[in-house]
Image 1 (spheres, rainbow, N blue to C red):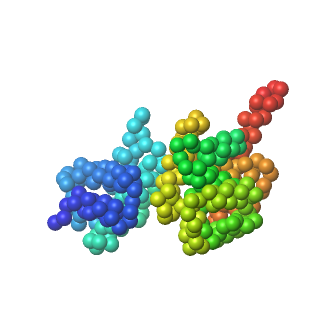
Image 2: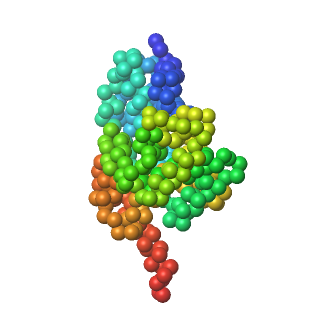
Image 3: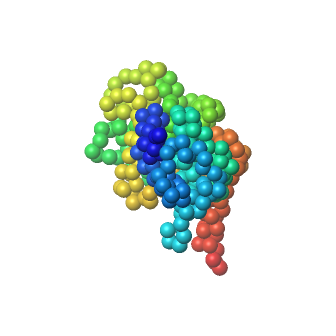
Amino acid sequence: MTQATAALEAWLTYLAAERRASPKTLEAYRAGAAHYLGFLARHRGGAQTAADLATVTAAEVRAWLSDRRGSGENELCARSLSQALSAVRSFHAFLDQRLGIVTPGLALVRGPKVRPGAPRPVTEDQARGLLIEAGADPDRDDWEGLRDRAVLTLLYGCGLRISEGLSLSRSDAPLGEAIRITGKGGKTRIVPVLPAVREAVDAYLAALPWPTTGADPLFIAKRGGALSPRHVQAAMQLLRGRLGLPDRATPHALRHSFATHLLGAGADLRSIQELLGHASLSTTQRYTAVDAAGLLAAYSAAHPHG
């Protein structure tokens, strides 16, 4: 009979080879599922086979979550517990699909409620500094700096996700007053384009050392081909170091900043929801907490009795 640990290794191989899971995801999933199997072995008095996992009850899964939570300084937060449970659910889904081992008890377990954290934008001055510094690296070709500046200006100026910005093709440029973006779930939206964004993209294309056609990606890597999200993230990491910005200054933080700065300037939530492509207004409402916190800080600093 196949041991549960062997099934776990087969599942991890599947995630890496077929689902293209990142090393960090694999590491987190391995830790969560291994702890789960270790708990069952202790709880049931011996190592489990894959078939044994079909009889896992909801009470046992809840007991594992309680054990996983820990206590005192080692207590895990709700988000970590939710991620561990997600790993176990994925493992059992693999057992169901590949080995026909169904665990009905798992469906009766609800994960801990996770309150979404407030977005962490950069300030307007920090965003401005990032865009200026992006094109001022003496160790790189001029066109690369202009390309990175154009990408970051697009993310901040239009509130795009990295994947959305890098999905644009050469036929989308020169950018007009608005662009059509296809976001999560294939949902499309129209996003206005500021003159500063158009100018940044035009400057990059004018400096690009080789011609591109309409089917080519808009943003090209140094060795040709489409620019990768990893490059944008690495470029932002270098900029953070040069400007002394915190780790929260990521490419995605520029999207958060787009929404927060619009809200601070008086834009309504419904409009911001449409611009960001959020399916639910409750997702967009997270930005009100950020703006309220900034408003309170400004009030405390400026009021005579603050």
